Length: 235
Image (cartoon, rainbow, N blue to C red; front, side, top):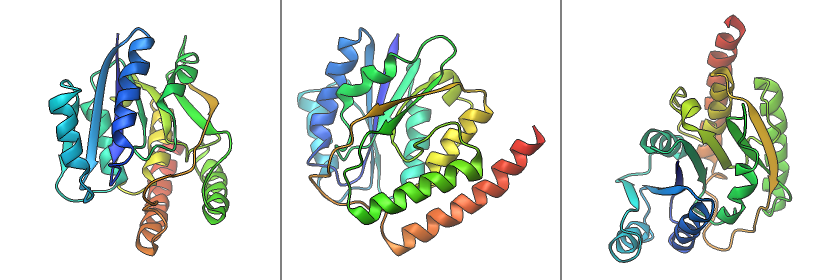
């Protein structure tokens, strides 16, 4: 079987190389054929140049998708799910706050009817204001959308291709994680969860805590609730 790993990348030049190498090593240790994809969302820190160099010199089968401008996290996730050809699809962010070597924890639960395994941050290593807002966001999202998981904000996920192909993502902000989980639930996915380690950000900074991005996320969450919960109630 083939296992696809894809990384959203935005100004992650300092961390993306190690994540790619770790992905190949981890997938091969599991006995799967590795497909590794990086989608760079208009980085300005030299990430695209580094990725091109890594493909030319180390990882010749690395698949690269470059956006000329920043299209948003949702566009990257949608693109990754479309591009993936593996029977199983795993993704995590390119900022190095999760360890790809913990993928086997998710794989251990991908058995029987399970088709979507989501991480739960064991302890969040972020500034206190982000921890508070993140916990509030998870609580509100879970009850607004009747989500089947605890930590919708944990971008450490393993999904069967059979589910992913039936999920069409429209959100472009961080609200896309709610959309992904809810639409997978509506498509019949069976969920499992496992705790994973969350590491402090050593390079760069989060792009979320900007007034424009927060407003966009809140707006898209409201639109999703109106559309998805209305549709869900009719099913």
